[in-house]
Length: 243
Image (tube, rainbow, N blue to C red; front, side, top):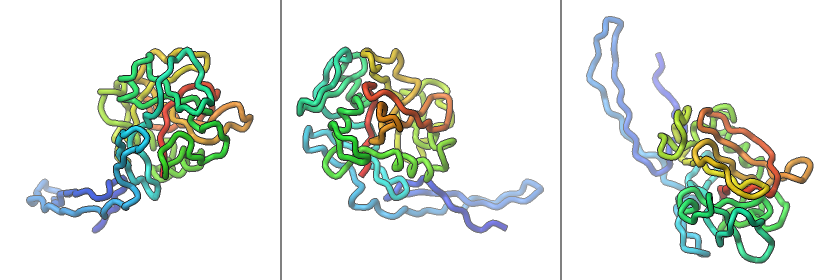
């Protein structure tokens, strides 16, 4: 007889209730017993914070041993999608269809070099706030491994429902608290993807083997996997920072 079970994907500092009851083969049951318990408090270094550069606030979520921002970064001065971002000491961003309001929901879109602030070292701070950095390819791997592997981790990372994701948003539970939203991309030749609802591509701070592209992670509306790809550095993708 099983007398214990292990749950994963719970949030720190959260209250949970579980219901336990017994039954027999004849269909008889007893009234459920309610079990309540709170998880351990969140670490002091993984808390909501304010980016002192522009006053925007972000939630943070502990996933395994990693502390991730719980939404995409939105920092910088918006420029039109027809232009390339440049090393001019100003953080520049794209917003889908050149509308600032889309950055407010989905975060900014950044070319790889701009996100990295023109460095090529994996794990560099780049455009992330102080104390945070762009996740390396290896750090993305740690995340998806903790969530059960790339074949299933996407469902645990996607926001639930179809407010933002296209139907059917396959397997989305957001049990990790990562709350990934779909978002357009800025093409390497300029202009934006026509849809906001089908997929999400998130940069890593690692280069492709050839050095011409940046490695990213991709989630999609009709699957639970997390894809690993390499795209030309001139693409504009969102950024998630890790602490």
